[in-house]
Image (cartoon, one colour):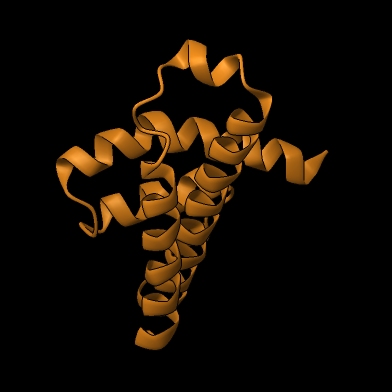
Length: 111
């Protein structure tokens, strides 16, 4: 059963972290790479957003597509894209960016 309170709590957390990231949006890549503290903050906020999204994905899959079992974090995004949960534009972004980050998260979790 899909729990709206769970999803809303996760979405609220994502929104707060994205607002925190906005503070760093004017920095270019070089400025970020030259400042370890900013780099670490940005990296952690992005990681938190993706982890919250993965939590939502897993919850939706369990609730709406229990016959599907993702083998890794990236696959949670792909399953929801296949189910039509994400738009085409979002789907392409997920397949590129989140997929790479989720793959790295899987490596960290496994190793």
